[in-house]
Image (cartoon, rainbow, N blue to C red; front, side, top):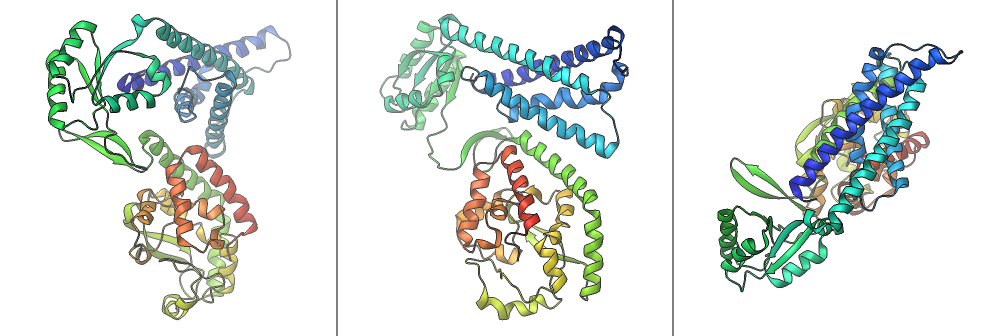
Length: 463
């Protein structure tokens, strides 16, 4: 599938899956509801309208979560076991969402049997639909009449390299009817191929062709009404991914080195804020304990407030429970020689400015809890690179190190779970942050959150 077709097919797949899940929900309820009349001993369940709140969650969110799991990718190479594993994860996340509504809103899932039947019926229908999609794609591959007729144009070497690197599934869906070297052949040869082969699309792989020649060829496509695609990999980058956008009416080629899934990031933001609110409620006794302990053991405010560097270095006010004496900043200059961290960051394993109860709060990471307020406000995420004080951000000298600022900062990260204060080299810290940015996924966030729990419980590296 190519470009817009791929996007349209994905949306149609998700709409169809949503409809199949809604149908499965109705069937599941009907079977269980009628079962109470057919079999003695079965407890009665409410009418279908009592399950609408569950449908409002399960029907729209399941296809979205399946997309995050890669359910709609590579249909020709997927196995049943792979699909079952992806659906199992979707069931898990839907269960988490439903559990949240049950706990916080006191809504009730009226029948577990309906949900179990739903999982079985919907799973079977989704697998059958996936098999049908696979058969359809295979039919297109076998039947050349269904494949898209394409001309490849550009420098001969660029064209061959483009074909060699094209994903197999894309290559199977097109029929390359002719290759034209527009750096040597006239544009009239390209136009002649349109008439000869009834071409639907021209793909230009022309990284080594002069732009004037490409412009002339694309204008010829425009006149003939043939769609022209220009490969955008003529500028080689090792990290940034090229995407297209529009500024006003001007098309823009954008090189983006941060996660590029906009809907996934919107969903991450929603999960962050909902999760932070839930954690604030769950940890409220610890907030009271921390506030009372700080008041009793040290003079000064309960909260420590400091300007930190947010996304792209934009300053924001970060909150923590205060763990240091009030003159901590004045004493910092005299401790610079004892700094155990390389680079612009200042850290001491046994910082003498931390008062006794503050050390307890740090050991169990209770001092970090007020940052949940920053997450609710959208300034931080649950998972992301740790935010540095603004004055430390200003001292970052290497451009590569500043790339850690390209995403929203978080309460926990790979650095937090793979060594925390045991990591003394700022370059190693940045390496872990960039590893997170370049490999971001919901699954990675989930793993980091799970790995954070034992770090907090055992206080690893928090002294």
